[in-house]
Amino acid sequence: MAQYFAEVTNGIVQRVIVVSQETINSGIFGDPLNWVETKIDSLTEKYAGIGYERHEDLKDFVAPKPYPSFILDRIKKEYVAPIEKPIDKAGVYTKWDEKTLSWKEVALPILEPIITI
Image 1 (cartoon, rainbow, N blue to C red):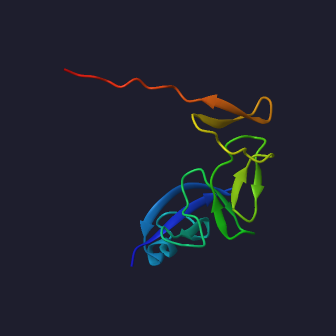
Image 2 (cartoon, rainbow, N blue to C red):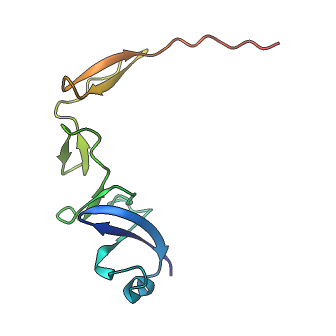
């Protein structure tokens, strides 16, 4: 039966393939110890993607850190801003500003309807 496996080097996912455990164990794709099963339909584990981090202590994959200041929330198993994101207002969205280490409001553009004849 085919399964999903992530090749992990120095804690970072290099590639994800669909293959059987038997094929991984054969060594055809390199050292079997570098391969970790990832489940696409798991409710408790995140599916691995290229560039994701493998955290053995969490027994899970974590998406790459989006900004240097973000910290790992070990319960959510994802990187979060060092300060909580404010609630978005109508017509405005909030964007992280790494230079000031704060959230900035950005007005959404008003789109004019396109009329074609």
